[in-house]
Length: 169
Image 1 (cartoon, rainbow, N blue to C red):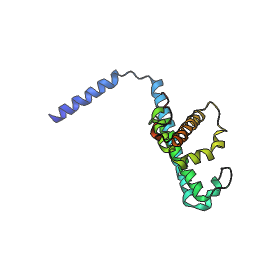
Image 2: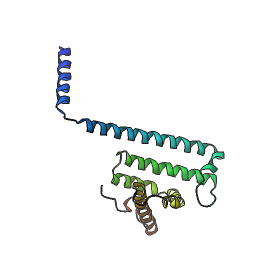
Image 3: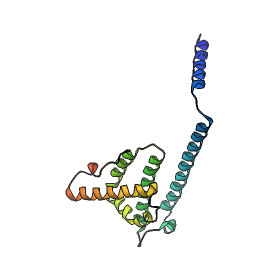
Image 4: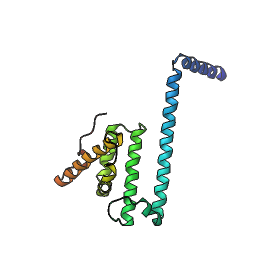
């Protein structure tokens, strides 16, 4: 009897699958999007591994010193970790794990840290090189506004978790 029930369930699934009209173009587009997401994820893993090697081995830190002025190794490691946090949040948005409003809330949380805001200021010249209408440049401007709101909230004694206007999705 169990085999009959299982067979009827499988038959039902197959009938439903045949009723779904998915064009070959749509299937190809879905496959390409999955490949893009998988590639992006693997690229970020590689980036994280490389940064990890530099933070574990201080002799590698000078290779990544793209900041204006000299930084102590501990400060540079903090900046690299801050970059990893920021990139992690950004990738979550790119992959659709976070909506724009969710990303804003997550960034508000991590940028309430003074160390995170120091990293953001130290990398301002990096963002100046971005294509002005790129997604990353737009995100940078959103974070600039968020950091300004957090600085104002801190100066006025307001709560950080309400600073900055959340964008609409």
